[in-house]
Amino acid sequence: MSCYNIQSINATATGQTLAMSKPVADTIESLGQIGSQNLGSIDLLPNIFGRKAVSRHALCAYFKQIKAGDTVFIQYPLYISYPAFWQVIHFLKYVKKCRLIFIVHDINSLRIDPTVGMRGMGHTNDVKRSLANEVRILRLASEILVPTAAMRDFLKTFNQISASINIFGLYEHLSNSKEIPVFPKLHKMVFAGNLNKARFLSQLNQSEFHYEIYGNKPSTFVLPSSLDYRGSYPSEELSSHFTGGFGLVWDGSSIDGISGVIGDYLRYNSPFKASMFLASGLPVIVWRQSAIANFVESNNLGLAVDSLAESESAIQNITDEKYNKLTANVRSFGLQLRQGVQFTTALKRALISD
Image (cartoon, rainbow, N blue to C red; front, side, top):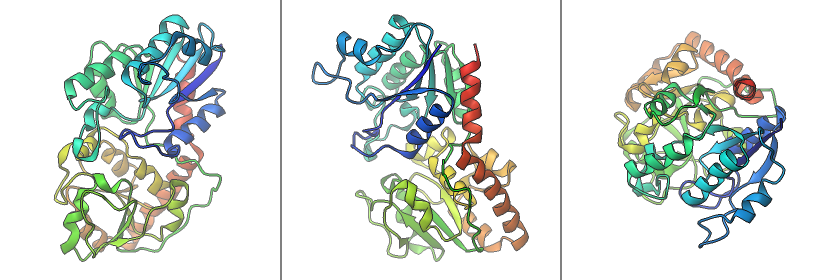
């Protein structure tokens, strides 16, 4: 039997057209290493009814090489219209009679926030409707891979989803370089990502701690002048600008804890920035109630805190011995992320499981 993979690469959850994200690109590369044939981006497939649906002819042409019993990996979600998404999955399951393995990057129903343009499945702000749409698709899976135990447990609450659900862990961060830099101990935190989702940054105007910020300047608030804004870079280039400190994995609107829908999503997801920081040699600062906090603490890869004030104090008081142990663990684990060890193992297990 053959193995294939499909994904969206031209759009984000906000509908913006962007280059392929590194998590998607790295997943494609890892799937290729286990023998999966990449069918490319499915974004341009919808072609009737205002590009919201797919003709039977288009589906048959796109998936013509797939045979009954083949396996198809789907990087979930696909950022096409919900009707088209449903058509694609239904066609693969019931017409092509394929085994479907979903690699879940996000559950959009858990992060609906109109203030930053995050909508649910079906382009809706209604959580219940969005969840119904997501479950309708995920229940057709033969197996589901998720990044955290919290996301697995959430999906298991839906009786309609009968697929086995397994954890792949922190995202890989593939790199041809196996040299992870050794940084000096610096009292600073590095934050990188979608700054529109990071309104907590607006509250740091009173902090004397050094925060180094990367990303497009936010359109919904003004960055305090006290922050060290370094600009925006492509993900594959970004880490080369880091000079040390701790990578901050935080979201929402508060520095005293996590707040808002986007912040609360940290209870379920594995932010890609955590993998980026670790693969770059930076220990991480994470919210104590986040889905990855236990992994970070148990593997001594950083610090779990309840507030940014707590993290500032912890960094300022960390001993050389503790810092050296942290960075040694980070470099070892970061090398695994660069090689895709955990993720590739999870893919192989999914491929051979019944």
